[in-house]
Length: 174
Image (cartoon, rainbow, N blue to C red):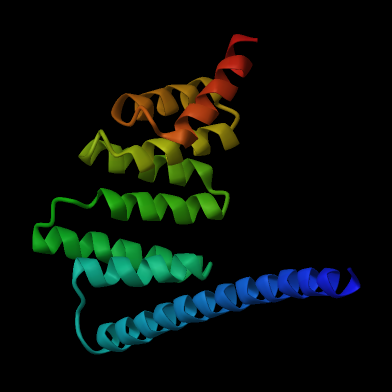
């Protein structure tokens, strides 16, 4: 009996250890891929003028690394490059810029950027969710609810919008 209990404990320990090793290696590979992209893009953009996509990718990396001032600059360069290239799908750039402002608790600027993204692409569900979240942070619950309900029109299975709109409905009606 003692021997079988030890085998069970050992098996559980090995399982937990294997899970931890897999998780650590996944994180290492993800970080290496991110750092490789960062290095490649920084080198290219320091030598040449970049494309909209390159500025956007580098800005997104800086955003993930929480280096917001550089992310803002690069998102703005992406917008300028998009204007020069005649790029039409710039909603993700405005959304990314809004996210950076939101992360810095500059909710008015974030809202402005999300609205710009929605002017270009009114059915951009991510921007609608983000706009709702920014309104919530500003305690503008009615506008937040409206934004989430708009997101649900375009994506009825959007779990974030469903959850937040149900919660806000109770707050707004109370």
